[in-house]
Length: 328
View 1 (cartoon, rainbow, N blue to C red):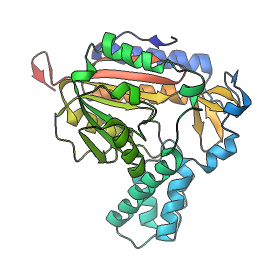
View 2 (view 1 turned 180 degrees about the vertical axis):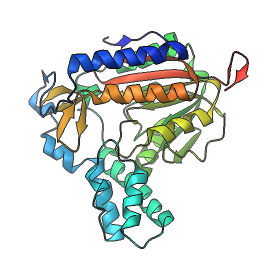
View 3 (view 1 turned 135 degrees about the vertical axis):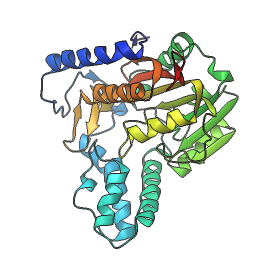
View 4 (view 1 turned 90 degrees about the vertical axis):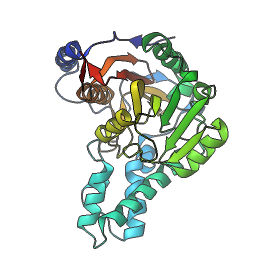
């Protein structure tokens, strides 16, 4: 077991602490974001366990696949958003295509959603996750999740009406969810979702984008879980968290994780892969985690906390409708 959980914080305290942490992090790592091409804290992995060179990651990256599929359908590539980047959401990509075609936005959005699902299916539908960071380097990530559920938010997830967003093909996290009696799963990739449905036998399964959970009723879920999804290409963190709040019941819990380690070039590398540089950015997982925390604060979640592991950083909290008797 190797994970570190932060203390649970109230809204007034956490704002000041985030600001202080940001200053400390910048002081430690420097003002420039490092471009770690095969760098970072490295742990050698057996050659047969490696995932290959980072240039192969670019070729199979979602930021590469989605515009390629859209270009096939629309016969034009946008000049800007296709290059990818953490600030490029699907809406930005859609706007780029719309501005360079005569197609209406609704049609382009439909093509974009289908292309995004196709890209995730191509990359993950048949993956067994045996050689990712959880499978090769850190298998105790499930202990961190269970610690958060049992000790921090203090819920019995088996009895909660639980929504899992970004389930993938259901292989990686099947042990976490198989005992949940009232499980709803969501994923943008249709074939992956079909596989997950066969593995987990949920009460409901929806092919949806996390930023638009239109099949899920307001205040209908006791728990919202989304692991290693929020760092995905073209992901809209702000809209997805707003949807999370909408579907959660009062006092419902949220648990999110973002990837902070990878297996590449036959070793463990800290950070997230950057499509623009072809390297790994060690700062990005922490920046994204802080962004999620800030948004949860703005959405009036309480009991917010974090738990970091070598594979991912967990962020958790609780939806609160009232503070000091005032509806928020």
